[in-house]
Amino acid sequence: MVQLTAEERAMLDGAEGAATQKAMDLLVRYADALGAERFVETDNVAGVPGAAHGFLKDYYRDQGGDYNAIFSLFDLDSDEVVEVPRMKAFSCHLQGGMDPDLWREQGMSETAHDGFVYDEEQNAEHGVQLLKTCTPYVAGNVPAHGEHCAWMESSAVVYCNSVVGARTNTEGRESTSAAMLTKRIPYWGYHCPEYRHGQHAIAVEFPVGDVFEWGMLGYFVGQSVEDGIPVITGAISNPSLIRHKHFGAAAASSGGVELYHMVGITPEAPSAAAAFGPNLPEQHFVYDAAERRRIYETLNAVGECEDVDYVMLGCPHYSIEQIAHAAQLIEGRKVHENSALWVFTSRAVKAVADRNGHTKTLQDAGAYLMTDTCSAISQAIPEGTRVAALDSAKQVHYLPAMMDIEGWYGTTAECIDAACTGRWAGRLQ
Amino acid sequence: MRVDTVDTVIMLQGRGITRGIAEGEALVTTQTISGWGGVNPMTGTVIESRHELKGRSFAGKILVFPGGKGSSGWSAIFHMTRLAGTAPLAMVFTQMTPKVALGAVVMRIPAVTDLDRDPFGHVEDGDRVRVDGDRGEVTIWKGGCG
Image (tube, one colour):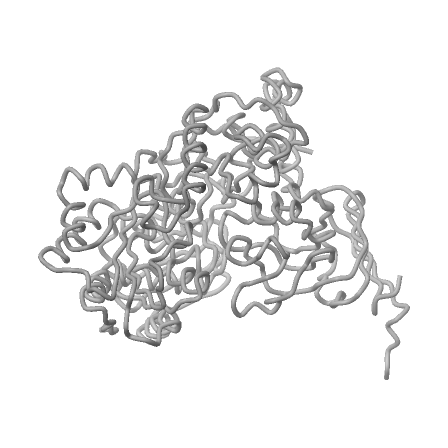
């Protein structure tokens, strides 16, 4: 049984109100299921509190169907509706279901939009910061090294653990919502230093330098180690935020990697010995030209027709650097009449893109810069889409399967060329 | 030699992570299961391409599987199966993660892990299985009797 401090015991006994009591009760059940011995304090929580699509709203209609009802009955797994107070922890909302302005273009109904507006007002009133992104670390929430967080979103979790050296498990909606009210999360898994040592060795022989290559390497690593902890050495160059972002998102989707170590690059891997700690490598993998080609072909296995009618960029949400690059690539050109280009980012980054003129450059070319969501999360694609082109290994892993369409993986430049010509001409160089 | 398995009863000892007792027919996979994007919660059906359970539903079954993978939406998707009446009766799994721990809690079903023997060597589709989350016991009646 999880051991409680006096403060945690008081929360469980109702000293901070009914909602906090329900939250603590859920966290105790969750900690006991994990086998955690105690909680850790967190003041950095990222989740999707109170989010309500049609099914949940209908299901809880008899109990009011409002924010309090959904947060109590679903997020906190309570049997009664309780009044939800302002969140106690620093709490952020991850990605959501539609763009706040371009929702009609995304094919959303008035009813769905009304629900979006209501949920957002409620979250703001309850002290949840509306980052509305899968990349909180690009939009105002960069954890500190060693900080205990409670985050959802696999691509954000792997960045938080690996690149920053902060500590989080891949939490779920119910545990993050409960953590927002209690500032507690089970001390288990990636919170514990002894759990963070490497398990498998990856030797990179084929040079990996740009974001396209980092994405493919990430996909390879996830396929190789599944949800293990890889220690990566060799010919990796030019580490940057966007390259880690794509690498981690790919590794988290092909395998479930939540923490990786890159020797000489990430903070817990000054050397391979330090990264492995007391562990001996269980398995060894080599990334060479043949593996690179195999990964490229795997990512492009869902592409057959070369007529591209949709290009989606921004998985994970684009940084300002990537938007500037896309704008530069498309400036003076037009999206083809048989195609469409949607670029996704966070609200914070779009504010900069607006002032920089990138949003207008994209609009002038016939593209949209959208926020909050992406085509996989919102399941919104241009009407009639049959073939998509994507510069994200994660998105090509998910979107074609979810929407029953074809998909191509290539560089950002190849994707923008496809948007402007309506044809896929990507090739592995 | 033909082994008559009809009357064979096997008991595995593990750790119950959630309380309660449930008994039913086993649905077994050695592949991990994705929640968001991998399961339709309205029917309890696995929808992931290339999954060996694709098109089959765990509703009302004892789900025997390694554990959860994929998106952090795992617990919320399995939580919805409880609301939709398509949740498994109980779970037996081998790889502990926050996904499956939280999922078992919010589905409010018994679940057992940390077993003293590999369950995949002992339980097959259609076996009758009793999961006792209070005692951490899994009882298997081969061939569906019990």
